[in-house]
Length: 302
Image (cartoon, rainbow, N blue to C red; front, side, top):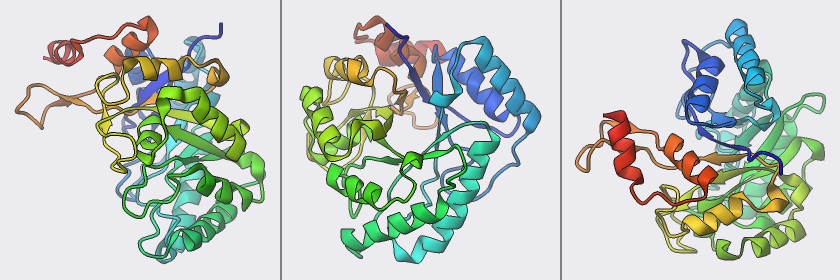
C-alpha cells in the first residue's frame, strides 16, 4: 500500500521561509504540509528567497516528500464572493499564485468567501469571474475551492454550490476542491458514512476534482454551521470516523492536512500555545487513540 500522505499547517517565517516549513513538518513526522506565504489577515509579504527555496526542495527530496502534495492556503482577506472586493481579490490572488509558482508548488486552497447580503447566486457569479481572471492556463497552479461550514453568508457549504462554480470555470484542469471534515460536518454531511459522502461528492462534483483534505474534528453537532475545529478524535466526529476517512482507499493519493487547535500549556493560559501535530500524526499512523494527548503535548513543550 502506498504510504499515507499526512501533514499539517506549518509556519512560513522570513528567516527560513519554505526551508523552515519543511523542517517543521519533518519534526512532526509528516511527509507533506500546508502554509501561508504571509500573514492571512494582511497583504504584507516578504520576497521569496530562491536559495532557501532550493534548499527546501533538496531537503524534501532527501526525505521522499513529493512537492506536488504540498498546499498553500490563500489569505482570508481574499473574498471573491462579494462585489466590493473583486478587483482586490483578483490582484492579490494573482500575486499569491505567483508566489506559489516561485516556491515550486502547485496547489493553493481558497475560501470561496461570503456574499455579505448579495445572495448566493450573485456570489457564485463573482467567484467565477475572479477565478477565470486569475487562473493562468499556462501555469502549474491548481486553485482548490474549500468546502465551507455555512457560517453567516458563506458560499460553498453545499456540493451543488461548488459544482456551479466549477461549471463556470473556463480552464477546468486548473480548478479543484479541498474537502474539510469539520466544515462538511457543520454543513450537514454525515461523515459517519464517508463512502456515502464521497459518492455524493462524485455524483455532484466528480472525485477527479478532489485535490486535498483538511482533517479536523469538530466541536459542533452535524449541521451546526459554526466552523469550530477540535483536536483529532476529541470532538463530535471522533477518532474512528476520522481514521476511516484518512485510510479510505478511494482517496489514498490525496494529501491530508491537519488544522487542529494549538494546545495551551495549562488550562488557564491562552498565551503559550503549542502545535499538536507531532502527537496527532503519531495517533494517525498507529491507528490508536491517545486519551492523554493534551497532557503529552504540554509535557513535551514545557
